[in-house]
Length: 116
Length: 115
Image (cartoon, rainbow over all chains, first blue to last red):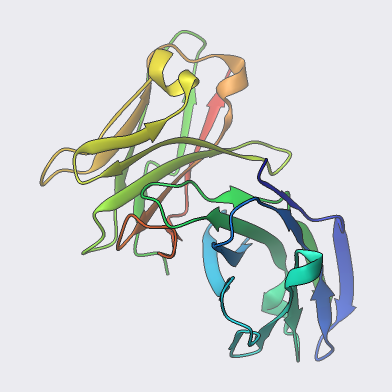
């Protein structure tokens, strides 16, 4: 059965430092896609970065990067040089296979608080 | 800022009342998803469309929820008879294509409170 698990409920960091969030997933598909989103205080969910299962290189976008460990079914998110505005809830999500209409499966999120 | 537009941002309904939410997908995105997010940050997939056609929907959606994505009009999700357990953030997302490799882009959501 497909499942996404984020065990860290909340993380507090000081700005300009690095924060790392964990995410593990379960799937029987050989092809899948992993996504990270953040949800701001207003409720808006913003796409950050993705990793395709067949790609070996870790994805990087701006100050977001991923630590993809396929044998461990793990996809960690790393945010470097954090800013106050990075305070949000971060969700890991997965879409399986390449069939039409598959839903995105979410973890329950990690709340990140960045303080001055 | 979101390019997926959801209205209204908030709605308050009494039990048994209808609750209707609308979504304009990002331009050029024929695929639309509706999710329900509860206060525990759990996401529940409700239904998705490709253009006007339903791709998948869960049982709850089939019974009390109705949704459509008419041509040249906003998509909508309507709860026929609201229950307290329906209080949640309803999120609409759109994507360029139907396959799993397509990224979903979300709106800001419509927060429903059922009193």
